[in-house]
Image (cartoon, rainbow, N blue to C red; front, side, top):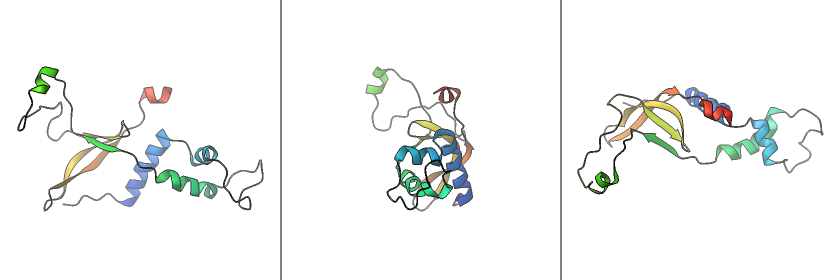
Amino acid sequence: MNQATPTSAKNTLLEEYVGELGPSPAELAAALGPRRSSATEPPRGAAAEPGLASPNLDMVMRIPVTVKIVLGSTTMPVASLVKLGRGAVIPLDRRVGEPVDVVVNGRVVARGEVVVVDEATSRFGISLTEVVGPSSSDRAS
């Protein structure tokens, strides 16, 4: 039961995430500095062409980020924590079937449902159901 996401849907998620959280390609190019070849740079004061920032944007697109899927959480006193051992069950704040959070570098960017990617190897994956916009605290910063 492979629930592969079409490439256009992946690009949409990436574009939404970058649009909400990151600078535009022109801002990235300005922050990363001028290109080495002066023959391809526009004269000062000229409008930059969209394709000129692509080498710098390609470099940014290769930056690794940490992606975590959060099944749930709980709070417990330290006394209970130290008593945990093999086979202990920790109840979480989510129920079976509720969406799980997709967290990138500490920020929730999407929600989805757990799916079986490959039954033979017991591999799971996440089918995205919602892309989360920036919170009001993110907009203020």
